[in-house]
Image: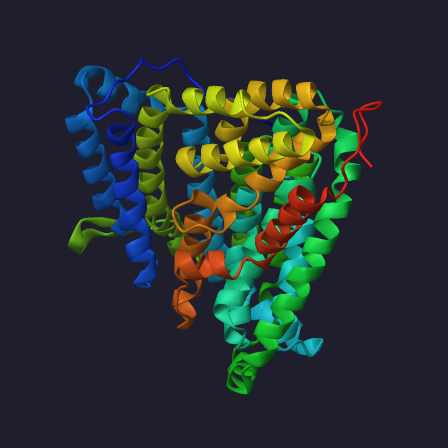
Length: 469
């Protein structure tokens, strides 16, 4: 996935109460989202009122309400927002299509043939999602492609549901950190003038131990809750007729590997899948479009897919509007300037780079925006203290692949929780955003590696030939 620069020139905003006035709306949003997540409610529609209230509070506290309104609209109308929403809509439709054509039952049949239990399925899910994310370079695409296929199947097999959801987003995190075409990889490396090939090679020392820790954790959690009842239920639902539909995600991944746009790959995948389902007799024509004249309504699996994506889409639009006001306040610029004067030694510089990046991610809720915001600070601080370009890039990516994939108010976690509603048709409950983040053992493994890196200097070398030991 190619890097998109989502930054725009926004009007300067000043708030009553200074820094506290800037942060109050965001604190309201975070508190509300965490409260809802702790309640176990997985539907992101519940976050809408919280975001509206946060925007309203920001409008009250801002001294120039016209400028505040312009900043909100500017944030909502970013190109990356429309790309994400369009991708979610198309992927949601493809998920409905795969379910209608019997692919879940086919995947269960295949699991039964190789005698895969719920525990084995969780492990296999993590590995599959690692491969898909490494191939596509997109955590979003991995979640969107894999969730409708693997979550219902694993649920029917009796897998531990939070661990299953965690394995999907964990595999997505793997590729986001190390894939050559990942936007996080590209942004972190190019922002520090590091060679992408050398940067990827250096990341093996971080990602492999983290992946091993994740595999162990998934096995322990899944094994302790494996369900024989689920295996029995799976046997009654298995049916191989939908196996040809595997060509749909394979085709989409192929297009991504050819460098096609996210919209290109998903739209072509949807058209191909619809045609394939009709030809094989797996998709009734009435599911493509039918009219309910008595109720003045149209019915279609496409309409169902769009409805499924509405909650997350509105959440994203509102969130990006709120984040834009934070960026326009200049608070992050002040933080970067403050940190720049205090990063002296190499170890201290690395700590400040990780710390400022963490705050940037937590406040902007967008890893690429955060990387772009701290680029100059990271580069100047690293050069002054002798931190190699690759190490700086790796520190940025480590932070970018931790918080957005574990905290319940970040879009990847909300997206994963949303995609667990694909099991609803099979009587499989959803997983809350809080559980999704807690069971993303890949990101927790990267956190362990980040702490080892910062505290004990793991992988640290002096600036030399653009390489890191």
